[in-house]
Image (cartoon, one colour):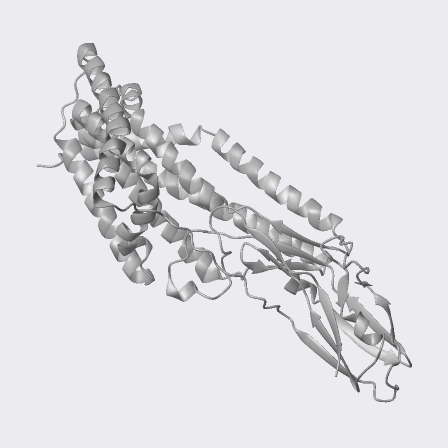
Length: 445
């Protein structure tokens, strides 16, 4: 029989105690509060300061950092499993009741942590919306989709539950076959470390059945299946594990020596063997980074055609205006504050007019932040008109405080959320680039 009647009561009692221990860790909420206050405070201050200019603000996606943090936390819990059980030894318990109560608490803790992430996001979002009542230049760069916010929460929860089950299985294996398992795990870790580039390359292919599943219902079915298999395996292994009360110091020293020797062999011998095999094959596997060409494609292309047939050939047209700059004779231009001035290119064509139509071609710069075109929110525009022999060019753009506030950064595999502008280009890290300058091209035909 897998479980006896009394074990259910033991699980219930141990669960209550473990939950009390978690609720006493108030510092977790303090850390969350500090993170929230820091991100929210800096954003609010920046928006209030940017009353009539242009600036962008990135509010961190705490779901990504929490995912890694919780993974590390559950690994620590796995290694402190025996110590925790020793503290709870005054309560009636068995292998099953200890392990199951621990796993349940881990799952509850993960759900609570994600609720904190969601609450932080909603508070940030609410603050930005409140500010937008008083400042009409605030722009949210990402689409707010309620269904994505809800489903993303459960997708993250599914991934974390799988991580918990995987760590739980590893812990059960370590407690069942401590010395042998330690050697094997360390050997696998060393192999992964020295082949990290290949692991990074091939791991997404191996896990594609789950992390690449485009259908949301199928993802949950697969995720539940993976979680169930891992959890069931760990329960079975733990059920038939007999824990010794003492540790054999001689055996412990032996396993440490074995682990060190295994790592040494893998770290030094394996690359030599790989090099020999590679030289025999006459080819080397090289990971090449593909370069993506940047096309000369400016958004917001706007052309104005002005009739100048009333001016005689050879006339000179003067240029005046606001927020424009004409390059010096050597072509140099002084840029300032996100390139606020538009550079007039081809003004020399107006020194000796040879045509009936003056063409003013406006091409704004592109400022890309995490795949988002930021300058589109400033509504850049140029008005052009001619009065006698004077061309007036007025380059203007609106003030904007562009807020980039992502949530559930790794949830980007599902068809229903594609092409909706919900997520930035990068779930990890930050990218930005300035493509070209704001130009006004002058020509005559």
